[in-house]
Image (cartoon, rainbow, N blue to C red):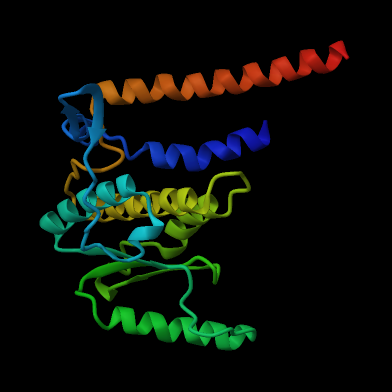
Length: 232
């Protein structure tokens, strides 16, 4: 049961992509072919300016949702929230931890020198097991780095389950990006229509039913396993 509910963490973060706006958008991305009733989805545009690096590491639907939140946040607050993700920041095999940290910091310094202020940057190097968050000084009192990393990002990346690394990365970045966007929006006293939290009533009801269904399914599997175990 513990493993089952751990798996839900990444799954739920990814499912949050399906906001009312993205659902309606997905309905318009199906193209019918004359010879078949089968629908063929169009390729999702992943050229988001908020993903500075790492589009190939993230699910296209996640990129689409991040871009939607990023654009609205920038239009309403002027703040850019960026993501820079790579498999590794290290150009050579560095075994000494001190050298590794110094190399990563130098790499990130180059990234920060080229982005527009005010900003928040989520920096991730998968193989280096590195995740960090940077922000402009003007956002120091708004963004709690440890809270975003510790509550929204790291738990999903560190989950022990069979989900692929791409799924974990996508879920963690989406969850973290959404938390950052919502925090800035709240501080600036504006509403983000694209926020993961701001769904239509019907979507919230669907989500509630879906959550209850998952819980019931988990209990059903557990009870079945118990009965089967006793019968032996």
